Image (cartoon, rainbow, N blue to C red):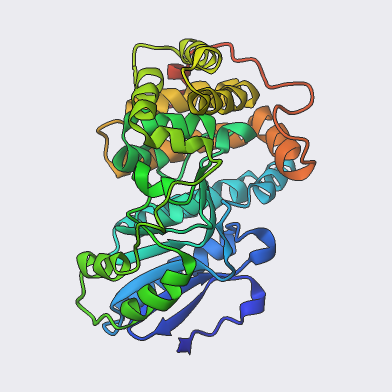
Length: 373
């Protein structure tokens, strides 16, 4: 194993050559591997170096400690920059993060991610562009930005459509629903599901043995060797599993996939199904959705719904350009500052004390070049 010149204790990602595979290891466990500008820049460097190395067969991204892959961007530091009037630093974080998303989507060598823990927000942006995405029994996937006064960025309006389709993608984007374990594969978020033990004993040795010139299909075969029917058993106790059933998919399509419905109508439909569901799984699923929608920022919800509808059929380039345009408007707004304070700093949860800012104009107006929140 060859390690690059980054000591593990500095919190930056490090590269480890295991066989011919380049393992990029996220290493801020105390911060749940949250992305800082330094982490983002290091990832730019590591991926560029591995892409240029003829001896590298594939990229592998995972968290150092089982339990956390990446819980998202360090938006608390962004909030601090905004409060200090350092808007350039706050803006630069997202510019470089979105640039990294574009880099990851354009990798020439095959790449895979191992979701050996929590995957949220920016963590999804690090991994959802990989052609091989491996969920495990430790995986919890979510896009919870609406609960802190943001919206699902990092190109999520593109990859949620590409991986899950319009209805499921919109449900995930609006509610921040947590999708666990094998349900990730059932919904299309991951391409494979293996246990951590199978990854370590069966899959990783095969990945290490890959030779330069290997394809994404070769990588996928390595992972498939570790899949078992027992490992793909449904997650018990997970309300999101309902969305992977035939009746659940139909319900999600009816509520979240109808472009003619306004946000208010979607919320009303969610409440009706919560109250009148035909079984406990349906009632619990829509109860969780109703609770999430009721506590999230109205502005975030309206703009997210509009973005998901506008993004359908658009390119990743379009979606990341829209993220660059929207994010500045969001991080300077009261909902973001107060949402991060309530959820991530004081940990009292959403909505923040005093409630969210009332939305007084249409969601479509936020997409005008000269609009502000």
